[in-house]
Length: 560
Image 1 (cartoon, helix red, strand yellow):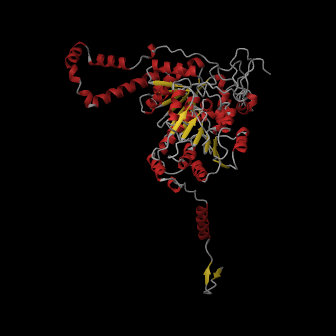
Image 2 (cartoon, rainbow, N blue to C red):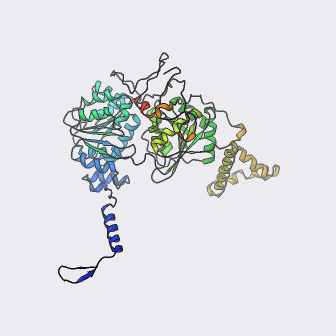
Image 3 (cartoon, one colour):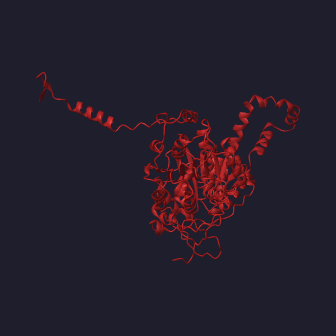
């Protein structure tokens, strides 16, 4: 068979199947080629902002930034839905900074964040990007001197980042005036809702001019958040970035089944064997963090802890030491570590299994960053095994069981590290030059003892004997209860990892940290999502909506 051209009238052979296939493949590649990510210099941003972006090493915009920045620059209200760690701060920060008039000394933008850690982090990011332009950014939060914060506000601010409780305190004292706000940002709105800040947020919004731009960012979109969009925003654009997978493939996830009383020794032996460069240990309560920090120091680790009761200056000092490599281990609660952006973390140890699966995602997200691999190890009490499946259902990845390291393995690993250090020191000329200062004494020792005896003595000083390790007492905490029926599991749970647990346990007094750190003068009505059941007479702890949804139900003996 052949074809005839219209103009020339000559007959040509019909295209072969190979030619057709090549043409189709070429068309498919062209049509479905991965969309190129926009670069920051393609946005309508000023030269001063672009210079700081380039200095920070950012070139291409993330999906949430690519879709949000153009809309925000046009002045539209935006609801951005994306997971933590996707670049939301720059998504709202860059267009906000672009609109700031530095010659006008009034507060022009307000960012509301759920915790002081996130408030500080957002303030640092906004200051970094707006430095060349001369934008003044202040952060206000509980747990720090309100007088100093008032003084800082009086010295001038274009943008204020704060937690709800402290913002209300400052408004009441007439130290924070919001009548010139042009841009209002609600960051991590779902977290603020979970913490019971809904009424505080509404009170703050009521004091902001109606003629404004509102940007709301949230990882999830519960009904209460949607109502904020309807009530306080004008025809908002909804930007949703689908989470392809909540955990990165670069993080190897393991669990160790261990009794509560054996957790600490198991963890420190594992640390001795693995020798993490930078590690974060997560504890469930502030008391637990303090005890773990003390215990790790006793065992010779360079460790410090952070939680909601820590003075802000000390917290910043601890984080600075950790980033600079002056600490090996950071011990933290979920709240204190939320939003931490520290590169180089190689290991995450979940000393206590998290109370909700989303917290697990945030925890292991501290490692496996910037293309580097990481490792997470979760220590699970036998009665907590049902939690693993709930976490795995969320992350779509099954954790591997890990065999605990023995005391002998830890001892051999520490000896290996000590020997390597001695070899490195002998190769260091700056150290060897000091040897002669001890020459006379060294020759005297060499005459009295054999080289082998001297070497053994040096190693005994360097390496802790496993039989004489100092005892560390970590207060026992009951395992998290697990209700199989609410999670849709059978008694043994899928995978045969262990029985579900219906516990006789009240809430830990320290479970709900004071996220805002300071006392609020504004009274708030109790919120279903944030009731505290700390009194002795409370026999039936309240079940939050998240607990119902995820199967994490805390019940007392006798509850039906």
